[in-house]
Image (cartoon, rainbow, N blue to C red):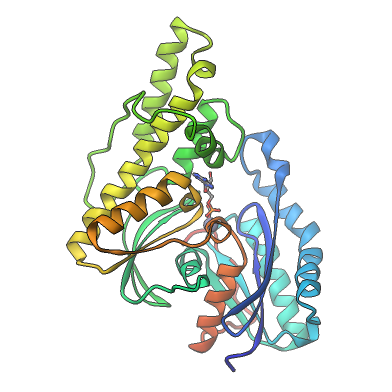
Length: 333
Ligand code: KG4
Ligand code: ZN
């Protein structure tokens, strides 16, 4: 049972991704990013669904070929059930269900946010339970208490924008292309994070809020552009560095407070924003200074991928958590 071949599918947003596992060992994974959304400045849900529909068969074939495994050897199929864009999710759900039904093998629906957390088990040095995870993606910002692979409790979330949205919306105000997070990260490396001051929100202990930060960037830009129409161009690196620094400080303050309350030994990051180079560096520094063991998935497993769906599907399979043919995708958690 531990060495079964498992196919994993991820289609919750704008990446069409597939992975093959043998037991808990990742054999190969493929990610096809939908660059078509860039010209619209954000993901168009209807277009995302159509592009998944066009590509999913080929992406699965590519990953099978890469491993040298035939589809008849696959013994279970895991897919992202939700949350995400419903039309996009339904393509993955439909494909996974058809594949599993045709082969009469188990179908395993996976929660996307749980999978982000479990991406930390795709590296050699695995976390020990219990641990605290800060999951920061394009749609969610969550402090998660992780008791076991499938036993997790969300301690607090964002009240408004997610950390990834703060990056993406800030980038849009700065005239940078979508998705803004990686662009801000890149420009910030050349800037001074003390050049501009941004506020921190006053909210509950384990809660997050980023909409005020975004608004303060908007007001700063409006004010300065009145005096100098080229203000953004002249200061883009410092603006990115300062804005990014504030997002990271907000995140680190929250995780520090929660870790002290819960007296944890191990801390983890997960989700697309944990690909951020400064967040990774500062998180490791914080953990080292406080005596906590730090876990961060390799960058390729921070943003959406099918490997995290596969590892989660594997643990669900071990616990007998497979689904009936009636299950379907869900947009919201
Ligand atoms: O987890 P993810 O791939 O998709 C969701 O589940 O939402 O996260 C995507 C988010 C986007 O907001 C993107 O801008 C952000 O992750 N992101 C980054 C970086 N790479 C991706 N944010 C900051 N710095 C990065 N290097
Ligand atoms: Zn995600």
